Length: 137
Figure 1 (cartoon, rainbow, N blue to C red):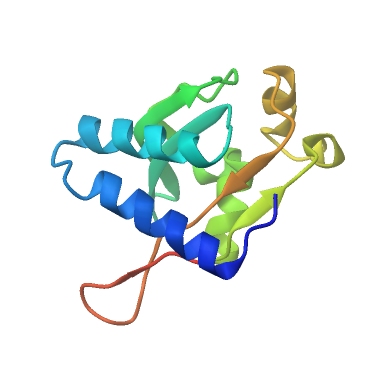
Figure 2 (figure 1 turned 60 degrees about the vertical axis):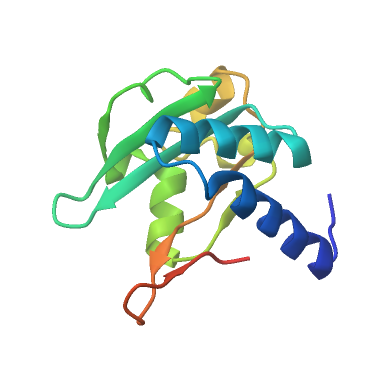
């Protein structure tokens, strides 16, 4: 799927408009999931918070869709979260189009076994400016 820059910004605006009025975490997650599905098909959506001090991920919302074995824990060590770790360490989106090419990495075999074939991870990073968050496009 290849979108023009204009199309990508329009999708981000539509997602923003869909979620901005949702004040509860459940409403936000449901609105985000629904809006993302309007633009592309996906098998799994999860949101988590990285705790740098404990080197762990806490799921803000457990996956919507396919749930690979071992991914159901509320708190996971960063070392067991292969794709998330790559995104966090690089501070860039991670896009793996063919999971079978990465089957030697931890967590990937469970994703393949669950039926997933590709994955995306996007880090939400706090910028240098107070009050601003960055989302790489």
